[in-house]
Length: 275
Image (cartoon, rainbow, N blue to C red; front, side, top):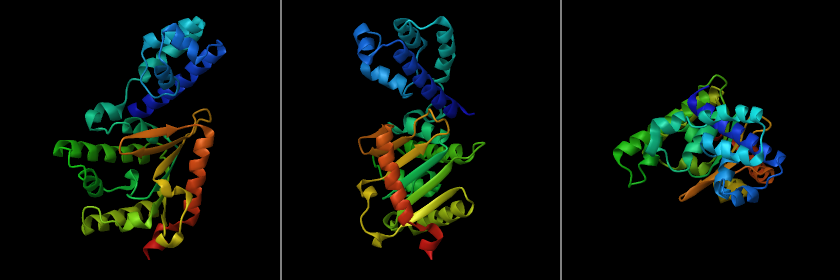
């Protein structure tokens, strides 16, 4: 297990256990805030595995909850594991805000369901395609562009090259396939790469024809991440110019999953669309 995978799993595991300990103690979020131990936002981030956790935070919370020492002894070792993130440590400021957590979740997901309406999904991009996309932001220096390209290539390696490779189901619109990113040569290489990935069985890729009319996913791209542990909630992820959102309420995830299934059922297999 690499550092990114370990830190993500540790955060989510610790978060679930801290929530259970609080609930078992009969303490509400308001009780924690009133006691001055943690703010509502901080407690939410801890219990949802969205942040590295300090030992002091765990000790303060479990003291408030009256947690048995034996349980505290089980929780503390998880704290250090929440701090190491190979992706963040290796790429630092080059990681776009909000994307670090997504990349860690992606690296541990059993299945990624991705709908893309404007661009090829990041796990399927060639290096030149990625560079052309990132260079569209004129505010970035050449050094940051290079770091972000490397970061995206590392995301692909962590997803596909781990001991048990994740499974990718991707649906992309015909518009994204026809959009020239970089140059005609870049697109030719990108299409060839998609063919190779699909033929090799690493991903199932469908193309939604332009003639197929309206559908529920037209509001924008999104990803649904599935995880092996039944207690590790599946997550829907959406992003825009000013940030990103992670939705793990079952009803929200179901809506995105149903939208993906709709476009997947209407999409043509890549090879059929390319004929």
